[in-house]
Image 1 (cartoon, rainbow, N blue to C red):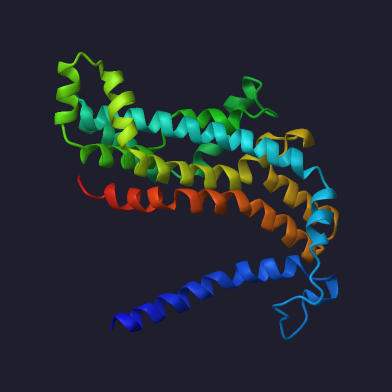
Image 2: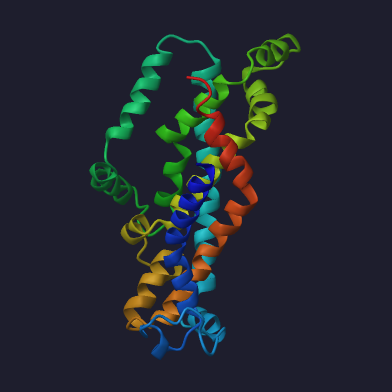
Length: 269
């Protein structure tokens, strides 16, 4: 039975990897090989120069810098705001605690598209369109699902930690910052990875708010590349492969915390 499950999971994993393998293969091909049938999985010849050519056709270094700046601040904002709200809901006792948590969770039922127009109007009125602020500032207001993850994880930590720290004279923020947060690497990892992935791959919000090409992110750069160069698929796949690299590196580095976060956030309700 176990052998069958391993075979099934391996087959499923290979199916999922096929588009990724095709992208890498295509990124190293000459144009005439891209849609050849049967598919040539191993390019002949292998053209690593496709990557240099693709990245030189537009200012992708600038796009990467903009995307790293936006994504880095988004991760910091989301981790800090969601963790401190989760800390309040899980470790402190105050009137209306459960009601506030229920209201926060209810916002998950509100589609993003419903908030998009009023949010754009607000940012437009205060003059933030064509700046990075609409892409960064919302992450400094805790996300409902991330609050849930932090609250669930904080519930799994012993209350004795808070009591011992209080006896030693620690403030509520001191307990959060010096004791609770350092013990929360698994859930910080999963929130950081999810936020990084969402912000890095975000296309719609940069499309709405960023008009100046000097402010474009990598997703807008790839879209413009596709429109301007009439879809040279080998070059487009080369540019797309480089855009995936930061996410893959982050996941490899933080996969231990990612997996632990998934396990531990479901331990206690």
